[in-house]
Image (cartoon, rainbow, N blue to C red; front, top):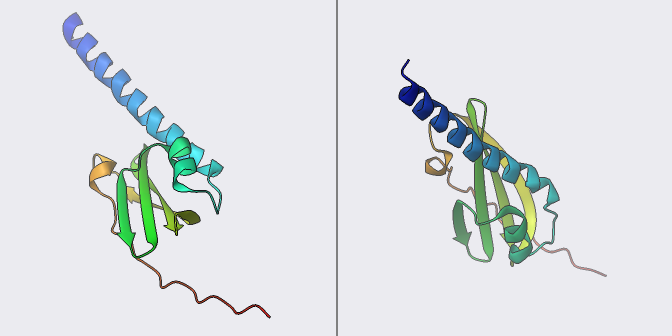
Length: 116
């Protein structure tokens, strides 16, 4: 293999692995997300979401990263601007994960119980 070609291939491998290392690091920070945090707190921890969806007073932010031969996704659900829950899913690697977010399946809000 010619030296110039080796350099190009090696450079591509390094830049690709660095990009996936960033995604993996961001995905690892999801463990710092807690119920009740606001959107500012979440964006400081996770950065800007790759996908956002809204429905009434609910909002969902999705993040993705590659792990081996799979794309890993984290969905953070907000109600009235506060974290309600976090969910994950994965897909067999099909390329750039930002192009393959699943649509959000919205749950009906649970009725509030009367306090006596």
